[in-house]
Length: 310
Length: 310
Image (cartoon, rainbow over all chains, first blue to last red; front, side, top):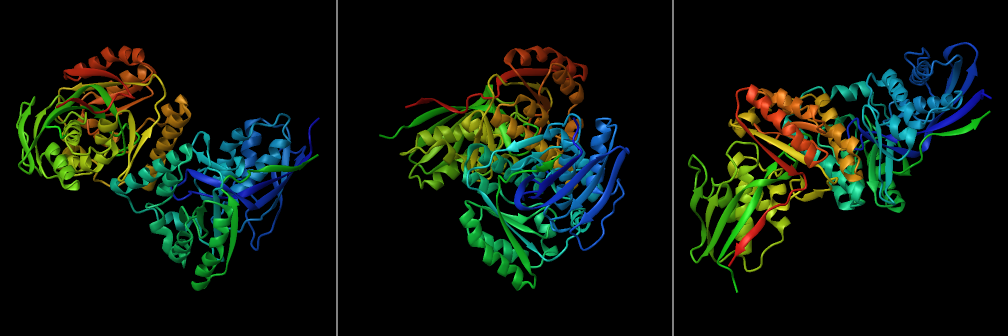
């Protein structure tokens, strides 16, 4: 018996994680997008409603993150039915918290539940990348992957690898009231790099992964940094240096820009340590004239989930 | 009681390992350099002999890899004596097999045995980098680190991380009768890169490390590649593409340039698999008009060792 209606929630996420540009991200507990998918006899995908945003988002299937992802899924299984979507945005646009990814993932997870034979989560990944393409013009998986699976994920172009997360690790994410367009943030990366820029960043990535796999916190600290992208984007975020320093002063393992910004995140040894840094990080944004909101989350936060399915 | 004379052997090594430019290398069983260190009352380091090469190498302390490394070690412990070195080269110059690194490491390991209180191996690393600087003008540790410790090593600028190696993994290295100067090979990397070049290479590095730590051979295969450096250096090595293809045809996990070349290496699931590729790889060089010599070694080959100490 096929199901007719499913509601799924997908969490926000921290993309790049400083050391893994376009490759590594983790889920964020709390904020997220919710999608209601309804099965229809009419083929194709239709967006019936988008709620929770002050502006209009495109509803055309090719331009809408959620619709494009679901259309890709339905094509791949040669579905003999259609799906309508109602999207409830819980993540601000242009916040660097993976909002477009969360919409794509929530829609996919809901639509998947309506298939005659739902696919395993990993199989939704290529369709989520299709959705991400509608939003950013790229197929980077560092937001869709953790929003889908939860936790910390290495999002390769053709596969997902769940990365081990040492117990206790928490993120403090501070989202200032400011929009950084992904397009503008990407333009900052146009000027070329020297091979010598790449070596320390690769070193950091290798130390970071070695630290995760061997539960060596000193290696994670040594690796959680970004010498490639952060220096070129930092000035898009007023107060960035002070916010980062506030987190480091509270013994963050590292702190950097979440996704394309303007949100700033840091990793801490415990929830208590992340919470202790919260006020100073918010103050640093306030000193730059920006209201901001803070989130504290395990790095190993849960991924997308079905809320109801009938 | 102090010892007066020590002989140490340090193995050749495969630098870069395709995916870890200037960062990851492994020891190679068989070829290597041998150094006799003798303690003298006269302070400082002196090179008494260099054997095994058709050309002269500089003997001045600052320009000689082995002497510069040992001088750095003696300074760091404020030694009240000197050391003379006799260097027996077993690795051809400009072969991409880590010859300068092996000389530095063998000299350091021998000299270390003559200290009143020998240091742990890891503590020799910064001095080995000093030696490497004399040879290449850079402080990359991807040859000295595996020559020192053995096995597969992540050589960060300030620390060494031993990487786990799945059982059975072997390297086939084919060294053609040709010299590629490190300086020329480095010049090929001067032209800048786009950020988009770094992402697939970082992805490969991450998959490779995840594969090593989880004993997942498919991930190691996916990661053992080089889209950054190899394409710019391949034409310095006549026959490179054919040699690489010969290894891949024999089911190599990946194949690329060893260090700055011209040696070419591939990784295989077993010694038998590496040996089976040997003749075709040599033939490929022969078709390009080059004599070549093949070596088969465990990736987890032994590092430097003291041979005698009296």
